[in-house]
Image 1: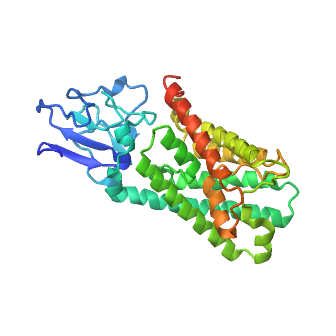
Image 2: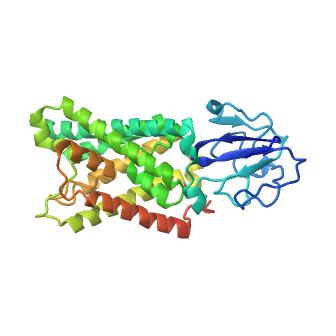
Image 3: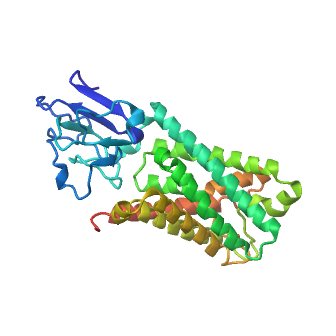
Length: 352
């Protein structure tokens, strides 16, 4: 707990910023990370301009730091830092400017403190809504394409992913990070970039949101079309491809989309040169491309789902769980493999 000379403020992911008057000589060692008081930073020495930066990207606070949580999206940093800040963030090691690629410690991975904040549950609600809309519109695109008799259904379904995913990322990304997909959440946890409590609650919210979206689609779709299309249920014909083969294929495409998404989101070069809209379009295009490619590889395989929530939601609605385990084992394996690579190699650090 901060003393009378300190002020603390909780923000997303368990980050707590503690501001201390420089005259206080006693360093904080709550997590065994900050060994000495942190001195003032010369912002001009940083590679990128920090005149206006996101609160998630900088932890150097000033005397005019906004106390209102609603104003934490952007802050303006003056040329001279009037106060020295001591940072209480488990993921940092003797540094004052964290980056999103910084791995969380074991203690930070189990941090449940954000669960007590209103802002966290606001983010969870947004993930619920995003998953609901994603499954509704993707399912509607699948049903409409099949029913209309479009000559190239996989191409149209893949193309539909671009605007749907891009718009949702732009809309909710600044609030919750714009996961809306449990595959991305799993990968973020296995790369130690998100705490386990936050990730698990995100996935639960996405599951409930997906189920609600699938039920909403079923209520407005005729029974004939529901039986004909199964609302885009994830399935495969065991006469053409075995469950193990389908799982390996799913895991391969899951790993590919994780690599693409993380390459855009955490690559320093992309962060410097791409706006949120451009990143959203790139990610949406990547999903659409892989959906189209995977659906044309085997007549007995409907293609990669790239989202286990999609498979679960429509399995619940149409009551068909045949070989459903493959659509969960595959993304978990893909996330674990990418997490292992990311933790060992740290692919996007010091590349540019």
